[in-house]
Image (tube, rainbow, N blue to C red):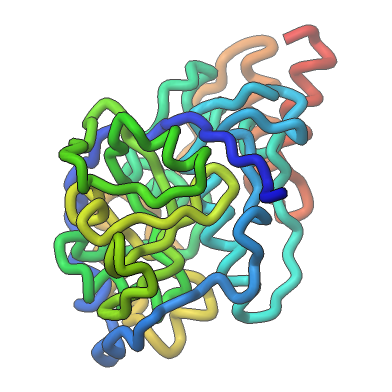
Amino acid sequence: MPPIRVAGKRGRLPAKRVALRFVHDYAKAPLPAPAYPVDVRSGIADDAWQMLGNGADPTCTSAPDGVGDCTFAGRQHARLAKAAHYGEAEAWETSDDLVAEYLAYDDGQDQGAVISDLLLYWFKAGKILAFAPVDHTDPAAVDAAMQAFRGVYAGVDLTDDADQLFSEGRPWTVANGEQPDPESGHCIVKVYADGNVSPDPKTGPQDGWVSWGAFQRSTQQWTAACLTEAFVLITSEDEAAKVDMPALLADINSLGGAEAGASPAAPAPQPPGLLAEVASLVRAVAASTDRDIAEVVNFLRARGL
């Protein structure tokens, strides 16, 4: 019997224009054209990506019914694909870690996130090395970026039947007149593209995504209608050979990031009491690679919060 697929929650707020050039403009050499089919899953099974708190998730004790942390789950899904390709072992964040981090970002409100704002926030916090937009209106550019950077971190507007099709293991499609819903924004990671090859004559060439802990196909027509923004997350494996990092970092810093090597700003006055303790603990956890957000969650739980 195939694994049970259960659709999760949304959580991507409408796209906001970010004043950066496309990733191919920062490339040291032209990105190779996609060699179809492009598949960057590196052997990860279709049902092995983990929900990570973005829907009903028995591994998530803090929010077992799920929250709208698709943007945070997407970051880990992108990292999983890249680590599998490079054969790297990493200490992965748990579903509770990601939910706590997401709710801290959202001031506890579970109201979703704007991808470009979140990427800049992660850059400032040292969660990601860098990021760059991809021209989401150009399928070949998206697939070239996916191939070169082992995945594309994407924002889509889902159709009303997306949950049902996902649960049934059928591709997302707009063949019957379905329309993307701007109120149904979701963050997913592109990891596959048929390109000009069509293994299914009924649907034509398909794309493939990681969403709600599983691999999900879509028709190319669905992608054209529903994809509204796309980015690559730059890691140390990418920077040396592929990206002009000084130029990219200069442009990201112009958005408000801290310049590398710059003197730290004077600390802001701290709020009194418990809030000051929480703020201090969050800063300490963020500054250490040996500590994680679970420490903050346990601190709050110990005080009945």
